Amino acid sequence: MYRQGDVLIVPVEESGVPPRVAELAVQPRDARGRMVLALGEVTGHAHAVVGPGELRRETGPFGAGWLHLPEGGRVVHEEHAAIPLPKSWYRVIRQREYVPGAVRVVAD
Image (tube, rainbow, N blue to C red; front, side, top):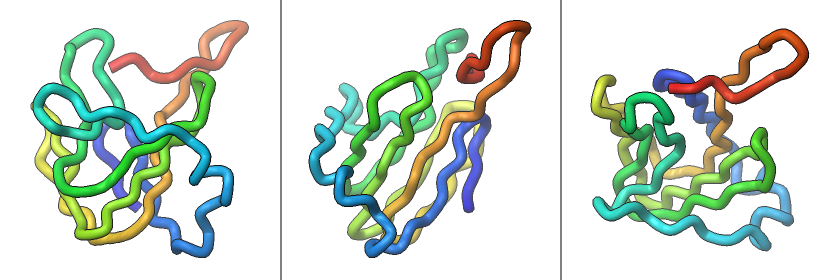
């Protein structure tokens, strides 16, 4: 497993990727050519992946991301060290927090 700030990145065997992932839309890359895993609402910084691959997202505020890196890649962020990722499929999960009466995605 890999963690960068409030983003958890879990390797998944290809056989463990649910068939429904193939039906999810591929997320567009940002203006810098990165796959953005999480955008900082407060700071404007982004947890993003550089390298060839695709990012697909399940719907809803707690929907997981599914990242396919056929050649590997790197997770980058303006305030964290880069993390190299080997070629694989990954499930991307945003950290959640409890506030009275609700659960929400952690604001960065």
